[in-house]
Image (cartoon, rainbow, N blue to C red; front, side, top):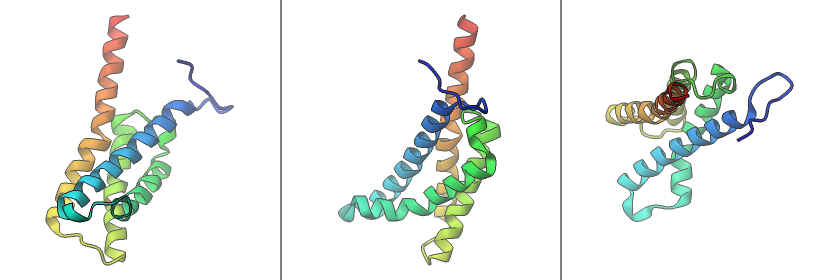
Length: 134
């Protein structure tokens, strides 16, 4: 698989894939949470309304961490993206008058850690295993 590079040498395809993976996982988190608390009212709109504060914070996390430079790095990118996503998402929820009960904050923090950093740890392990196999 060819990797596209810009004139600056930044690889485009891994960054786009990583951003889409992050957005999908944040949306999955919101969808599961919404379905858990509103099982009779699950809708794309409800999931979108639950997800958008975290998706906005995710975008900020990508910018703050300059994630496109090392999109697959668990510590260099995954941790800052996770921290900004959780804190920014919660801040937006507070500003909008949405719930930020302590159990929700804890569950969101742990779940997003597992999702946003976890997939990068798995990818790093796969890359290391492939490099050793060569």
